[in-house]
Image 1 (cartoon, helix red, strand yellow):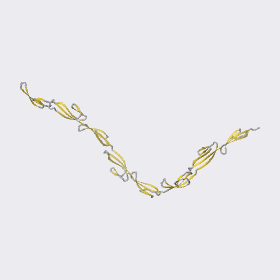
Image 2 (spheres, rainbow, N blue to C red; image 1 turned 30 degrees about the vertical axis):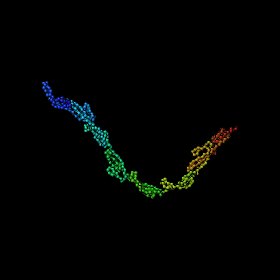
Image 3 (cartoon, rainbow, N blue to C red; image 1 turned 45 degrees about the vertical axis):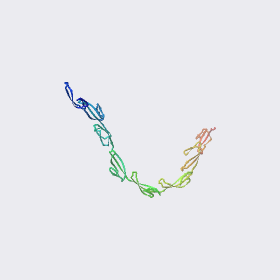
Image 4 (cartoon, rainbow, N blue to C red; image 1 turned 120 degrees about the horizontal axis):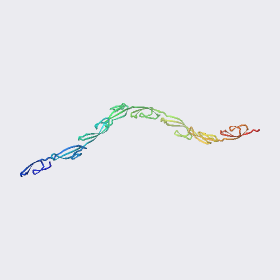
Length: 401
C-alpha cells in the first residue's frame, strides 16, 4: 500500500516498478529474480452531506448533529486503507414571525385556507436548503367604521359633503380610508339653521336712554340689532322703545304714640303730610309717594265686675278669681291697649224666721206646703243675683177644746 516499502534491487522501494535481484541458485549459479512492485494508493473519498437542524448523520462511529469534517477508515479491495471524509453541514430551520392586516370582510390565505378571523396561524414551507421553514403569521382584522355626525350651518352657507358643496338639509354619505386603509363610512346629517327675527318692547323712564341700534337712544321708536344666535347664525331683534311715565302713590299710615316712621328723609313721630321720591320696583322710574301720617295714642279701659262668693269670672278665654288684673293687648291699630279688671266678691245673706200655724193648717216653706213643725230652708236670689238663704222655724199650735 502507498506508504509501505519493499526491499528490492538492494534497497527499500517506495514506488511501483521492476526490480532485479541477483541471487545464488542451488547450483551455485547466478539466479536473477525480476520482481514488479505495485504500490496501491490509499483511496480517500470526500462526501458532502447536508442535514436539517434537529436531524443526525452517522459518521466517525456516531450519530453526528454538528457541522464539521468526520473521518472513517475502511479496508479497500486491495487491502489498503480507504478513508471516507464526510463534510457535514447542518442547515438551520427557519422560524419567521409575520403580521398581516386586513379589513373586516376580507380574507387571507393562511394555514391552508382563507382566514377571516384575527389570530395566530402557523404555516410550514420547504426552504432553499431543503429544511422546514416555519412562518407564524399574526392576522389582524381591522374594523370598518360607520360614524354618524350632525353638522349645523346657517341659512345661505355651504359645506363640502359627498364630494360637492351642499346647502340643503338631509343625510350625506362619505367613504374615507382609515389609517389602516379600510373603508370608513361617515353619515352626515346636515341641519340648516335659519335666521331668526324677534321683536321686543322696552319702556324707559322719561329722560333716560338705552343702547340699541348701535347708539344711545332717547327717543321712542323701533330700532334694529343683529346678534349671533346660540347656533352661530344671525339673529335680528327689532326693539320698540316707549316712555314709562313717572308714577305717584297716595297712602295713609298710622303709628302708635311713641313709635316713628322714616318719611321725607327723617324719622317722623307726629301726625302730618309727607312727600318721598322713590324708584319704582316695577319700572325702575321715579315714583312720588304722598303719605298722610296719623299718630294714635294708647287705649286704657277700667272694667268693674261683681261676682258672688265662691264664683269666678270667665273673660277673654280665661277664668278670673276676685281681684285686680291689668291686661295689655295689641288693638287693631297695632298699638297697646290696656284693660284693667276689678273683680269684687259680693257676699250672700242668711235670715232666720219663725212661723206659727194652727193644727190642720199648712204653710209654704222649704219649697212645699208644710203642716208639720220643723226647720225649713229656702234659697232666693238677692239684688246682686247671689244666693239669699231663709231658715224658717215652723211651729204648729194645737186646737184647744
